[in-house]
Figure 1 (cartoon, one colour):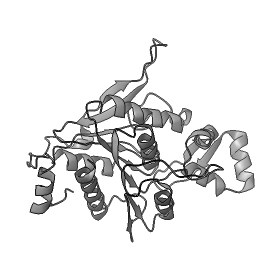
Figure 2 (tube, one colour; figure 1 turned 180 degrees about the horizontal axis):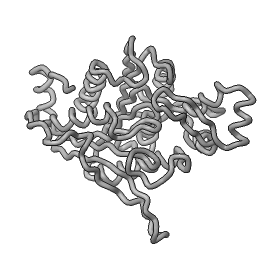
Figure 3 (cartoon, helix red, strand yellow; figure 1 turned 45 degrees about the vertical axis):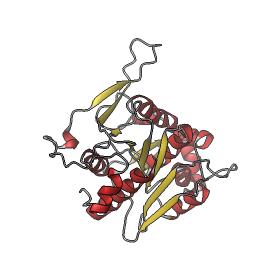
Length: 296
């Protein structure tokens, strides 16, 4: 659902050069829109068919918005489509995409991918699809919030705002630490862990190399080198207090570790991990609107 903004809200946005026309709704459901594709061919293999599927909605205002999905989620998800609807109605450029191994169009197996691959995918979309936008607000759901943090670190002059939705930095390390010693040893020995999930009838099959890659390169809150995270842009974190997958204290820890002082943490008392109810979507859209209005 789209937010109903007051006259004062509209005037504030108009002062930033954002047009508040009310365009007609799209002629197709956005979740059914035909995606575009970005080749990942590096020129070294003529048979390389790797590609990223994405949807890009142009707009006249600045900054643009890039949405990063969660673990084994896709750009067809409720939040991704709702945020695109919100942005299209306000003339805000918006992009949602699928990492390698995710969604309906990936040519790579999920089990072969690592967090390095997915962060590279997000960075590639930011540098190519969003190349004409000097300023971008990056928003991420669950694992996407983790990836969004690294985009802010890698592109500090381009990323002017960060919106984390049940952000899950270091969640792979959390899974490992919550296992018994026997289960940890088995994961390392066999190379895969089957993890039951309420979101899919089949369990997640998580490779040990995924954990190793994250531990060596990308963890932000755990490990021996806990330190301030040098993210300096405006940040808004939204988390459900009854999240059974990623506790809300994860966002509190992240907030405390960020260098920027301009951080807002919204706790939704009855919110779960997905935060996909209409009232959750409205809160997230409101947070996005505030970031867009002030991230200049």
